[in-house]
Amino acid sequence: MSVGPEREYILGTARELYGRVVYTHKTHEQEREIWAGKACTMNRINILLTALTTMFAVVSAVIKPAWALILTALFAAATAAFALYQSGFDPVGKESQHRVAAKELLWIREQLLLLITQCHMPTTETKQLERALEIITREVTAVYKFAPNTSPQAYAAADHMIKRGHFTFNDDEIDAMLPANLRIKQP
Image 1: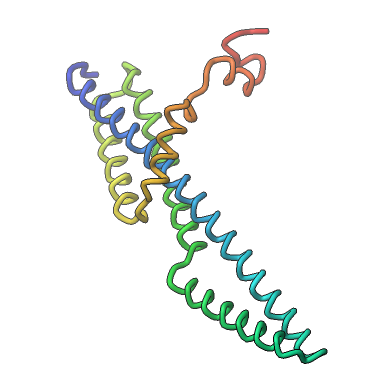
Image 2: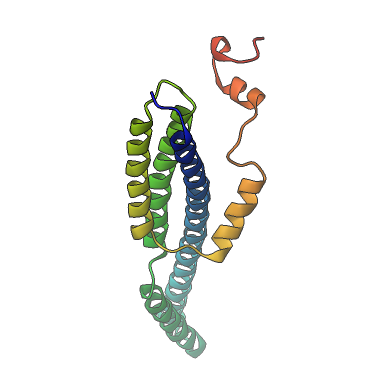
């Protein structure tokens, strides 16, 4: 096994890539949440407009006041206008795109974590590490190439969560998730 600066370069590159992937993954998760909220709001508006249009149509048909006919027409026009507005973009589709990108990045993040671990193992050949880094870099590039754009709001939310330690665990937290015989601190 060769030991030298090559291993350090691989480790440094893997660590840099890991940091970028963590941020991008979390940003896509936050963007997905933004679009999910927009989709939910739009669905509620659709339900409200449809309910009001139906209610005023029934009132118009039963008691036939002029105001009910006017309100029915206004709410029907508002419902149609909102449907046209919605056709301009697809919040559910955007949510789905960001979910797929986040899941792909999560998988790559785990691969990078394994590569970083292997860089610290003297039994792993440097050539094997190089090949793994090249493959992972191609995978990251492919995800970045086809992933949808994210917003500054999603990045700011991701940055805030990461800086608060969202992706880290202390020994006690990990021990709490493991069976007793695998814990670092034995009870």
